Image 1: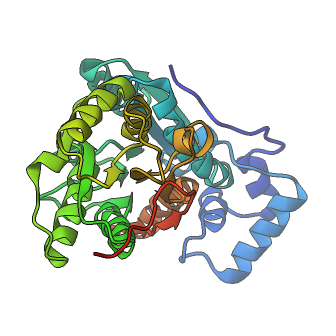
Image 2: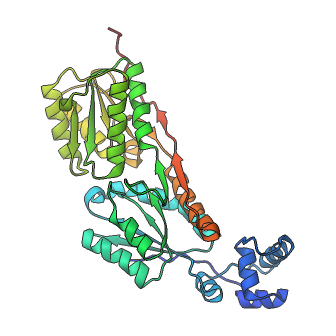
Image 3: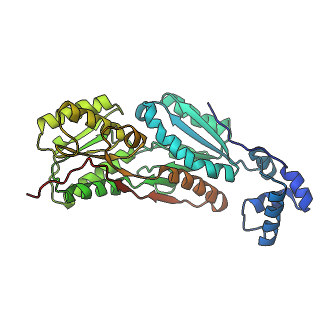
Length: 350
């Protein structure tokens, strides 16, 4: 499936160029903000473009300039994203992209994939059939071969997340490691020292980064890492999370707080605590990374660390637009804030 975003066009670029007595290339570059067009000419072109309600058709602009202005985005419906609720974060990110997509007259192709083979085929179709020249990557793995594939095909891209071992590429991301440190500081200031962590498989780089933040905070505060307090859950399945967390709490009753790396492990933690008759915010503390499930569905509401995903989507498009002009690489790291919803209690200092 692919979605094409476009507008209704009142005048094409050829007619606008003729009215201004300028070449199509000059008009195109003036509207694109290129430095080789004088400020006087640029203002004149923009003035007439507004007057005649001109908005460039992506396909027509491509023909006129010889360059494509199309963006591809693939949403996997398997693995980490097999649960439909988890796909909400993608559409929050896309909502942030949408304003910039319209203002920059970018043609947008969105495709879905049910397995790894379909995902690979989707990227190949975007590159070789749809002829996109821009792609946004996400669900970045520790070692992600897609980055080299896009470089090989000379596709401009922004990664939503970071991989390891590669530096020369543009990305936007949550500050995952620092976020875990912020959570740990918050818990330790409330006198928690027996802190458990429920993660997903660390082959996803964000999960690896969050674990590193947890471990470094333990070390900084001279708290010995207890491997029994750390669980890694393969699938985003609340029932699977609940089972693993319940088993851990039964065996290690001294645990006073649980950090959940994803909102689905948080839902599992709520279920496990309910089954054990542990009152959240009193008998046990839970803190998680925020998302649409935690913020609107979870009961009770959970204290969470939150990031602005819409802003990430907007920044990704801004970076791609800037790359068209100067071909540099850019990075953007979103900072986090804690939303206190009462699920973390303060312990008496021993």
